[in-house]
Image (tube, rainbow, N blue to C red; front, side, top):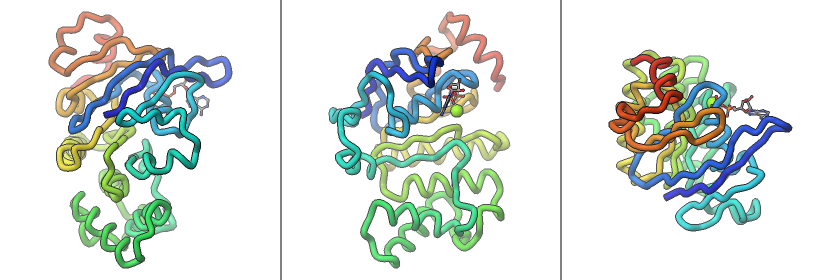
Length: 242
Ligand code: ADP
Ligand code: MG
């Protein structure tokens, strides 16, 4: 479980996150939704420690992450898998090397074990046999899947995905959502996905947090969302047609 309390974050005089509270439960896909610039990516980065919030607390299973030193965060960091908004693959490395490289940072597995693990994860995302390809040889959907393979390479207890559907056609997008859902159940991971894709919202969102101008405007299930009578939320839904 992840709990965040009263997260505030500014960039100079731009107050981007205004007192955000939320609880993300294990074995579920939680979504952070909202328009462009509403603070979704910033919130994700504050949770995983890539940004330091000015105030507020982040707990990973009751352990307060925000008060730990850089070194003391390492054990929790090892349990975090992250898919970045642009997949963030190294172009000069093969698909397999991209995953091995991230295992290098956090494990002392042998080279053979790392290669095995990388290929196991590639198989898991239906990319078996593509291990020697370079990112430039992959489609957008394949890059996302490599990003997911890398994110799950450490058997993460916590999985974060920033816009896993951006730039994908609707069919591929659904496959990626299904994969995220399956992996969440398989690992019983606490999964947090940032998206503005309404298909994802209706398909995989078990808990939804709606951000608007850096504030939590609404939270609930996708079913409740259709009944919610909040202008800002309706505007978001209508701006993102199914
Ligand atoms: P979203 O992911 O919802 O589109 P972001 O979290 O990326 O929104 O951005 C929210 C706001 O914070 C925007 O106004 C953006 O310009 C600003 N912002 C995000 N990252 C930075 C940064 N590293 N430095 C300065 N401003 C930033
Ligand atoms: Mg973003």
